[in-house]
Amino acid sequence: MPPTLQLMLDSLWPLVRAGLVFTVPLAILSFAFGLSLGFMTAVVRLFGPKPLAAIARFYVWFIRGTPLLVQLFVIFYGLPSVGILIDAFPAALIGFTLSVGAYTSEIIRAALSSINKGQWEAAYAIGMTRNQAMKRTIVPQAVRVAVPPLSNSFISLVKDTSLAAAITVPELFQQAQRIVATTYEPLILYVEAALLYLVLSSVLSALQSRLEARFGRQGGYLESGA
Image 1 (cartoon, helix red, strand yellow):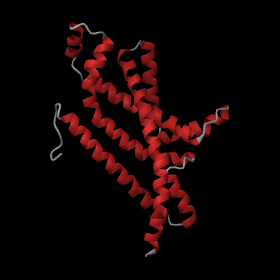
Image 2 (tube, helix red, strand yellow):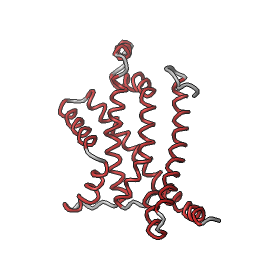
Image 3 (cartoon, rainbow, N blue to C red):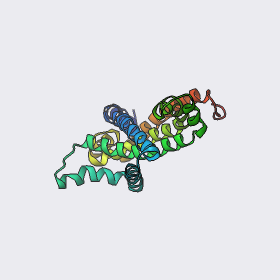
Image 4 (cartoon, rainbow, N blue to C red):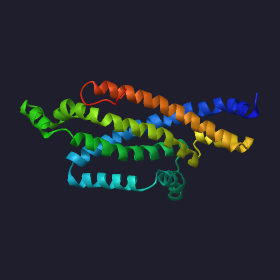
């Protein structure tokens, strides 16, 4: 067997294991927490009191306007200088959650704003409160609008988790770096890591297409050939 192929086979399981133990959980947890944060941020910006809305706007402006890698460095390497010590995985989780929250809040805000005001008026006309109208009428319609961009955000997040290697989280890319340090074969290992990210992204893209097709049956257009 060629040495290149043997090296790729020998390193495959360590890379996959790092992906399963760290990359996937980090992406799922960050997206779940970030989506909750994004929804609350969007609701506050649309319906909250002005002081809270101003804080929400500042949060979105700051997170979207600064690089994610810098945010991770501030959390992991910067906060210890003021006595706040956070382990690598929780630091990455906090950083990715804040980033996801800011970006998904804009998606959710746009989706909620896209619902015609007549839907609110119809809900009020049959005696619903604002919370009931939001839960039973507005959110179900907004979900269909938000699913495609939210799915894209999750796929991007999976790839962005590679940045956690910079703060020593032993995820897929960090594991590739460790193997490179002992084999001195950066091209082979980094290509292999890229292929694993590609496989994972392709699986998620296929799931996204099925999810969009399910919501698409309720209205709107599907991609040609989907």
